[in-house]
Every structure is written in C-alpha cells, then in structure tokens.
Length: 115
Length: 117
Image (cartoon, rainbow over all chains, first blue to last red; front, side, top):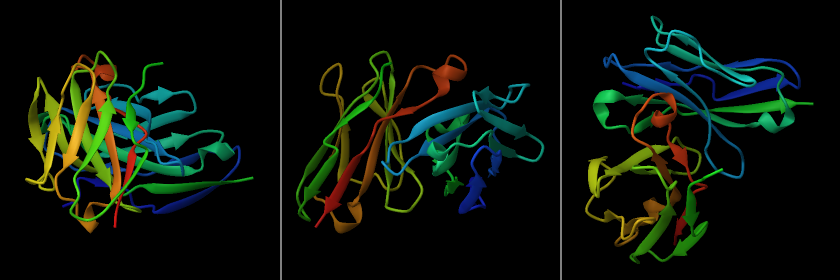
C-alpha cells in the first residue's frame, strides 16, 4: 500500500490565484512528520513546509500553508497568490518516528502557473 | 545560509565502473541520507547514516553500494560496479538531531545526475 498518495499528476493555476495540492498518507505510528518539497526544472529539492503530527495548528510559511486534517490523514499544501516561479514539481513526504528518520515521498504533482 | 553541497553535478560513466558521489552536509548536522530519483519518478530512500554507521538502508542499497564519512565534512556514496539502471539523480540530505520542527527537517543538496552508458 502507498504510504503517501498524491492523486494529481498535474495542476494548472492562474497567476495570483490560490491552489491546493493534495496529499494523503497512511501510517499507524502516532508520531510522524509531514513535509512538502518543491522541485523546479533545475532539479534541486527545496524544503517548503513541515507539520508535526502533534502540532495543534496548521503550519504556515509565507505564501505556503499546510491544511492538516489528521482524522482524514491528509496534508494538503495551499499556495496563495501563485507566481510564475511557483511552476515546479511538488512532493509530499512523511517521516515516521519508528522508521529511523527516512522520508517517504509521494509521486509528486506538477504545477503550472499560467500568466 | 548554510547548505548541503554535492559534487559533481553530473557524472557520466561506463557500465561496470565505480563511481563516488560526494556530499558536504550542513556543518552542525548529524544525520545524513542518500536518496535517488530515477527520471520522472518519485524520490526513493537509499540509506541513512548517524554516528559513523549506517542506521537504516533500503532494498535498493545492496552490496554494490557503500557510504563513508572519511573526514569531518564529507559524506560519500560509492557504487562499485554501475549498472544501466543506476542512472538517476542522487540527492544527499542532512538534518540535526530531532529537537522540534526545525531539527526534524532534512535539507537536500542540489543532486548529482549519474548517467551510466
């Protein structure tokens, strides 16, 4: 079974609009961390945002926010006021505390921002 | 701002040759990782390293792979006899000990694109 599922292979959004990238996860570990990374066409992996399983509030980092719904096991990334530079691949990842710290990645969502 | 660095950025090799990919993690980080990403696919965990030993490895990380921290700054991944299917982007990542949110985050290097011919 997939541990991290990103069901949107590709998404389009108009510049300046908000967009939500979906991520669901599967774990029986009560302690875990959820991450989003951005991978532009140049290939590097850029950390965007982190949510711990015990965090009471949704994480925010500038234009990025994480809509964490623990009961639904979802950790959707919301990008507000999209910019052309947001066009990239976005990966959701999970770290389970009983698994030594490795990250498990989803398949990714390719976001294209249209002018 | 401190960052993870990797060299070379691109390595081309013949099948059967040995390659060494190099990484310099962020200086105060203690956990080190290698991941790979085959073109167009998701990022896959290879190995984690802490306190000068492997703490976990995946099924991909077979006897052809090894890691080493030869000095206080470098972290290397060696592939002894490369295969065509080893062609991928290889990422090094590092993190500090887990002391809350920032300690939990792995920071990735820019990657080494390995092409095996």
